[in-house]
Image 1 (tube, one colour):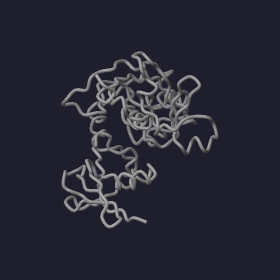
Image 2: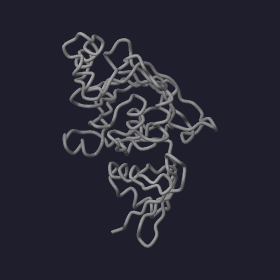
Image 3: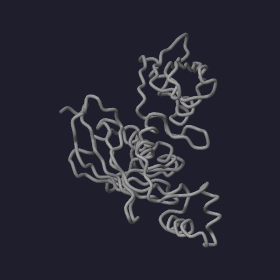
Length: 269
């Protein structure tokens, strides 16, 4: 089993919450920690609207902007593949999301497996309980939220219900929704915040250089704002190929809704 076709199976658990909120999922061993961050956003149910970091003892991995802003020693998470730091089953490390609410996740590498020929990665296998709402105030705030949302007579019940947009079931976990978001991406207020992670991307060498020169957040906006003439509305492009024509980058792929061919042109400098 070579590194290229090794699959890592993880269990992620949100710390300090009982009963536990957890997910079991599989990814390719050669993806970067930035890719793992995106995967965790989907499997857990976050919206990628806050800072994040991975911690292996004293070693920190996060995005380039956070490293520059905080001025602390660390590594860029988009440059380090998982299999460089994870070499044995049972290895564990921490993922923190939202430095304000400080959601601490424990990740355990449960298994190192051969790739299944018909499987599409990443994929979620199982999980339990709903993700806390974004910006609810961390562990303490989530406990207060649950207390109020469960009791119609609570003085904060109506406010929290309006804030969350209706009912909230802390025991709910929708595996099918996770897999759908892997295929179609995660949206917040109509905007794509996590791109489709099972989408294939193929570039000519020059086109790849062009694409990689674009910041990741801008890439996500581009992917999520392609016009589909079949649906007659803005859509997300998946399974796309990129090539250079007369100095411009042409992305040609599929509409995430209808599967029809869509094209996006990015003008060169």
